[in-house]
Length: 206
Ligand SMILES: C[S@@+](CC[C@H](N)C(=O)[O-])C[C@H]1O[C@@H](n2cnc3c(N)ncnc32)[C@H](O)[C@@H]1O
Image (cartoon, rainbow, N blue to C red; front, side):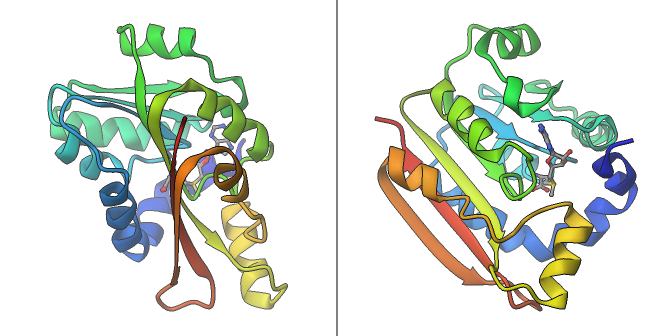
């Protein structure tokens, strides 16, 4: 069983309020427009969904991709509760993402305007490959947004975070975006109740 299948029942309670302000900031900074198509990479239980749907409206499309069936079950419950008809979930290893599969699942000839990845790149085992593949899926001038944790010190606390999240928060997860994108913007904020930094970064595909 995958780690996040085990964590799914407690994930929302543990995470929701802690990261909400950073999610809001990220979603604001990718400047979503009504009708756009957004890919939420490693969407987990769907904690970004409401913020995205509020911005893209019913004409927009949201596709959530995640490896963990149990996290996606939680995401599906939120979709059902809110009766969203324009949110599609795909259970897949993000290293295997391709446009054909996304089209099959969203029932559209999609053009991806925005990609968000929150607390994902510090977790995906092949995070650089995931970034490269997904960035390639973006439409020209599309925006990629990252929100993730960073602390490169090896303390008891960082070890605990890495253990609980099955992550490596010493990764410089925004570097590939910084190298490849135009209009790169990065903000580092202190994590409330923690010594880690939360990095929020966006960049456009040329
Ligand atoms: C810390 S959670 C973040 C979930 C969500 N993005 C959020 O902000 O709450 C990391 C997520 O990455 C997913 N994940 C890990 N490896 C993956 C992979 N190779 N492909 C797709 N999803 C993966 C996990 O199942 C988990 O739901």
